[in-house]
Image (tube, rainbow, N blue to C red; front, side, top):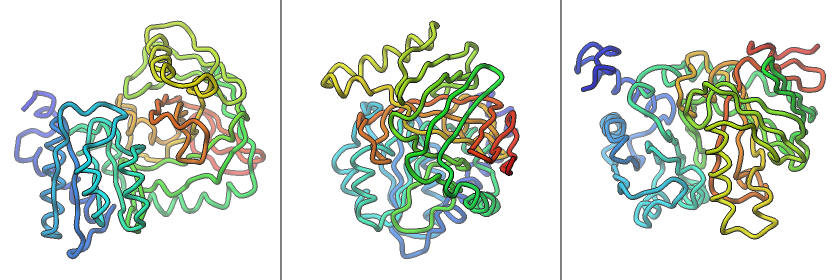
Length: 344
């Protein structure tokens, strides 16, 4: 066991217990699994300790629990093996604890289309993150708080996001605000990431214009340099210079190569915007945790097909902004990173 884990948990017994406590929270509070339900846990070698904890917790409830190990050759954005995809379609509950996200794969989409399978996904989760931080939130209380925000968003379409670091971006929403990312995944067909606790929305295509300055994290990496993006008509048209910015451009270029001209022109679509509500989450350099930090905002770039958008490329990338101000017409949602959610 690494010194990092020893320093956080003291000894192997307390470490194992903290892992099992979090796993039981997933099984009992988040998924509310019942004894007759078949459960599939999909994991990989890098996440196998988490997978085993989830298996142990699920097996305490139902003896219809199966764990599948993804091959080491699996690459980000690619489909799981056919036998895994087929098993996913036949379960009441699927838990995805893997390094790379399977949320936007056809396998996950087809499992959801059965109308039966509810799915929790934890892409990129590590052992410390699993047993502390955002995962330890009171998800029942979070559900209540998020549902209380629903009335604020009604009939309001225009959004402005600013920050002291230079973000100033406006857009219209293309669908209803989502306030159901609360950690409770107990209904057939639901799909949810853990840790949860964010409000998000699909920006109407071609409506976003301005500048985004990402200063918190990018794709699970804490930033020591700002990423400045110029957005025109919903697509990033310019990215500031820098090592990370160069990698972002190269990633989009690689995605664009096999696409036709019209499709390649929109690979840098701003696919989603949201802000965090989880008071236990911290900026730790993990995209799943970073995006639910209370009062932080995040922008998602790439695939927006889950909302009915045109940019179906199978890959998303996201950046987190610290201490934003978010205005929704006559409502201040967030002020300098503090949740306000009240009329001006």
